[in-house]
Structure formats: C-alpha cells, structure tokens
Image (cartoon, rainbow, N blue to C red; front, side, top):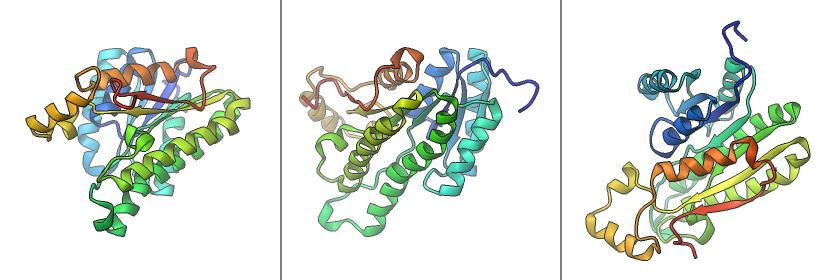
Length: 254
C-alpha cells in the first residue's frame, strides 16, 4: 500500500472494461466516487486501457488502475484481484463483465467453441468471485455484480454455449448470495437484452428492425442503461438486495 493511496473511497474492479458495457460501468462508478480497476484480457490491449484509465482519472478525480489478465486463467484471475486490492488497500465491489461469444447451432458446435465460452464467461466469473469473496468476507462488506444475459434466462437459438454459460452465472450468483449474505456481501446478476454495442452494430438494418419489433419498448438499450443499474447494485443503498436476477431488456423477456 503506497502513501498516496486514498483508502477512504470505495473501490471497484470491473472485468472486461476496455469498451462497451464494462467501460460504461467503470465511468458510472468513477462518477459515483469509486476508485476503479480496469481490466482487459491480454497485454496487447493494455496501452489502450491505460489511455482510458488516464482519461477517467482526469475526468472524475479518482484513482484508476489498468490491469491485463485473463479471467479464464486461475492464476491470472487471482493476481488480478490481488493487484486491484493492493493498489487501493480495499475492494468493495466487483463487476464480472468479461465475456465472449462463439455462436453456432448446437448440432454443429465444436467442443472447443463450447469450452472456451464456458471457461471465460462462467469459470472466469467463478475465479473472480472466489478470490474477491475471500477479501470481502474479511471486510464484512462487498458487492458482487455478475453479468448474465436474457439468453441465460430463456435460451437463444445458436447460442448453446453462451446461454449455458450465462445460465450458470445465475446459479453461481444465487449460491454466492446464500453463502456470503451473513458477512455483509451481496451478489446479484444483471441480464441485459439487446444493448447497442459494437457487437449489435454489426447487425444489418433489417436484423435490427426485426429485433426491435419484438421489444415492447421498441428500442435497443444503451450501455448507460446497464451502467446505471450496475451502479446501484454496487452501491451501499442496495444492501438488502441479494440473489436477484434483474433483466434489463425493454420488456423482451416478459
């Protein structure tokens, strides 16, 4: 712990926070006064992540760390949590946002495509929760927010691996909530629907219109819509909410 550390601020670690929802969550928490640890999956992404860290620190007046680590790797995930904790002297909130897709019909899906998605999305979430949970139990305070998906709630054709991983995240989250509640640690899952990111931007206009017609609110969500929800779940004000799965999908899953 360095002398320059401000240990009075809450601290949040957000995995997969170089862009999209993860970056929006990091900015939301920084705006709320959290010191934040950003994460990307490899050293190749670290220069760009450091630029984001510098920008957020300057814009919101908080301390920001940029850390490269693959959450799918147990040793790297453990080191990520340890580095975030050591950088700030505490760890109050963890947002497990790191995730990948390798879509394809189940009957044609290769084992490697199934396993890799499970390794990152589900096992990676487990790795971070386990390491962070030990710290939070000692603190007798913590907020764990795990990113699921409406695909994990209701399934989705062409996403057997992704849907299974996100359904697993829900089961994991509910179990963590039961195990850690008495220590002042909450765990909740957020299940986004169609959110405007670079992934959905790749859809054709016709595809976007067809999806939009199925959404009662007739629009895609924004990364800020998700970030505002995560910001609340990561705050002290959400202390009596745990083990919940909150769909943020414009009513699509109704």
